[in-house]
Figure 1 (cartoon, rainbow, N blue to C red):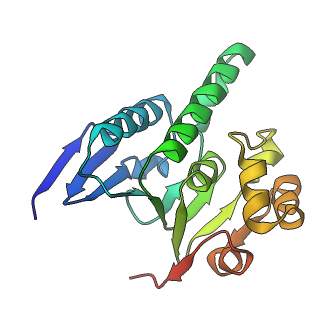
Figure 2 (figure 1 turned 180 degrees about the vertical axis):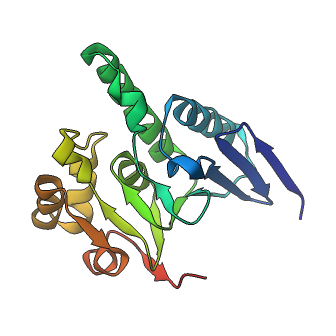
Length: 191
């Protein structure tokens, strides 16, 4: 089986036969989603859309601590309201492109999957979590409400009651609780 890898510094694109693996490569920043990562994800989705050999995609984060902790907070700190709106539109575009891929997209989640990282995972067709994974929108306490259709998608997956609790309280749930609610398809043991 031929193996092909490319790495632009923030996203590793790896082909293993019909499987494409996308790995967010910012472990020192808990795989936070900055402008570079969003741009790389859009380019990767374009490549996958043109690749007739890809039968499935796995999206994951580098390292052991996080799938993604969401927005890159230092990047957000200096934004004007107009710039923040542009960033939110760009994040939604990435989520929509992932959801529109014609092949199954599986989020392989370990550690923190919070904020915009959880929004991205919600746009995947399936979520498989390692036992130490945790999910939520703690940014609500900082005035960062979820976007990218997260409210609708999470409500459809787990019901509006539990989804509203996560949105309103900013609480974080375990992989086991996420499985019980139907947020993740399976929980696997940590290696």
